Image 1 (cartoon, helix red, strand yellow):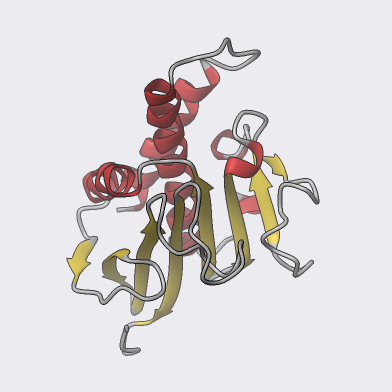
Image 2 (image 1 turned 90 degrees about the vertical axis):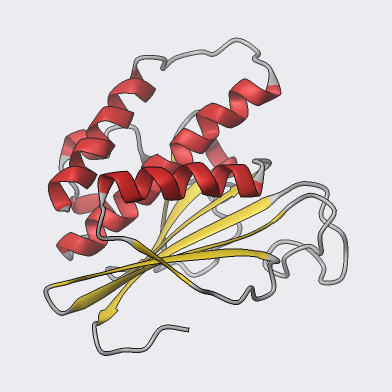
Amino acid sequence: MFRGLRAAVGLLLALANSGCGAQPPQPLAEWQAKAARRFYLDMTRCLYSSQHGTSISDLPAALKADLRPASPEERFLFEDPTTNVWTDDTYRSHIVLAEHAADNCEVVADQLPVEATFAVVIQELQKADPGLKARPVKPGYDPIAYQLESVKNGSRFVVRFEGSEPGGLAHPMRFLAGHASRFSMLYAKVRRQPESTPTP
């Protein structure tokens, strides 16, 4: 399980770095495809660190080479100074990785097609870690929701996806509640908990 996730992170990081540097303008669909790959990469980092009981900053150098701490403007969703927030020079505030604790990691993105992005990310995560199984889940504030779970060495790893396409009610974390969002929002959280703890 762990080797598969590490290999996935390494491969994606190599692909991302092969196109680093100043990028020319590109069609929206191409940008979204690359951003979806980045979203998946950050999710594998969250899951890998959770499964290993380590922090993002303690990941092997090769698995975090493109990350840097987010600026105050880029981490505006996360006011708690104890939350470590990471991004890169390509996506900045559009895709951020937030580490609330060693067992609580989150990736937040905007302006990506929610259903399509989640479908790709879930498929790739299950390829890298076949132990991740889909579980039924009821949507909360956001209308689109999926959940994966795996159990290893007495711990349950819960990966929850939530999002809203443009035109849906804006998430209260980012906008005034009750207002329609002008663009999509995607949230994916990885939590580690005792195997015996029931999941929602």
